[in-house]
Image (cartoon, rainbow over all chains, first blue to last red; front, side, top):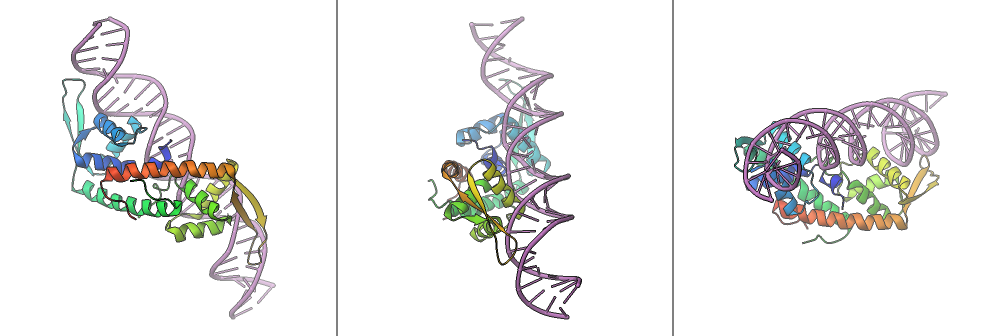
Length: 109
Length: 109
DNA sequence: GACGGTACTGTGCATCACGCACTACCGTGT
DNA sequence: ACACGGTAGTGCGTGATGCACAGTACCGTC
């Protein structure tokens, strides 16, 4: 399926949720999102989202050198990010509920 | 909440679902979507979506004069539209399941 | 020392919801 | 007559954002 459009406005929350669980660097966040089920997410989208969230003040950032390749830019969530996450999560659940009702079928899981 | 981005790619399904339930004209579809919970949906978005779906061959269209104002352009779903709706509905449920799992909270309803 | 995996940046494009302006029909009130 | 508010539709321009693609750079292995 093509999740490109469905992802709109949701990648933010997804990335926040992943980072909130544990600090991570871009390449790693991509893998975690894909493992979680968002298999078609583009790497450039994730890097862009991380940068955007950082610019917005929702994330902290620090660089860690690596033995297995180039340096890794880790991102961590801060208080503002957590607030954003909570708000977005609430929005998502409301929205998902509305949509599921509208589509007239039970939720998966 | 600002559903603008969340609506991306979902307005299609929502409109298809509403029209599948019963033929409707633009202005009416807007009201039905708002009543269903998508309170912030813009009228231009719905008109645009209806035209897009019609161009894509998912909807039929016929004009009906009205006593209470200008003519109404009714839209009805056809076989292709129903197929599209089913596919999108399935996509939505998969996606919603993935997201809800990722956000780590129960679904609303 | 070419290759594949890792890791990040930057540019440009396509999709799509939306605001806004405009046209147009109707009934009611002044 | 005329303005106004509700109904109904079209078209234009804008903004947000996911993504493809190209480029840079580091590492280990064959």
